[in-house]
Length: 155
Image (tube, rainbow, N blue to C red; front, side, top):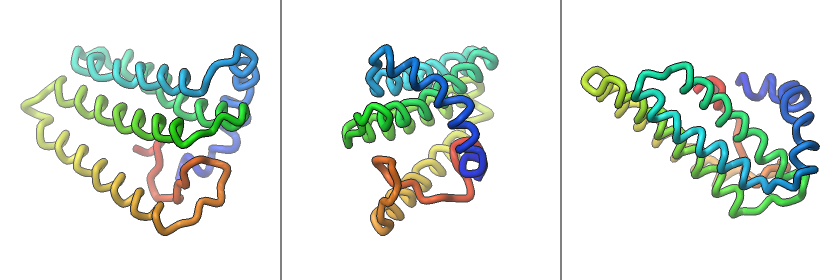
């Protein structure tokens, strides 16, 4: 819900100004995805070692790259199914690393909550994919995202 409500303003103020700069440097959108993925993977050891401020900073960078890569691909007309798959798989890897980092920080206390979070992610992704089968993609994105109650910001 937050994403749907604030996305246009966020796009205009936080993403669009940087797009021209990145496009001028001829960055491939997959590079932006890879940077976001690397930051997302680094969240796991940051959380495990108790570096919460670093983990939050890495999460913000990873999330920003996740919004930037698709916008860059559309601007450069480089949208591809391969890029969409890389983006979606990267998102799931980052989610796993966050949950794993939380678990590693306190395994005895967080084993069950971590399993519950991973299970909820699995159920969410499965339902997301099933809904995608039945809904036509009429957007400018490579993959249709049906609006839901919770989106990335809330999660």
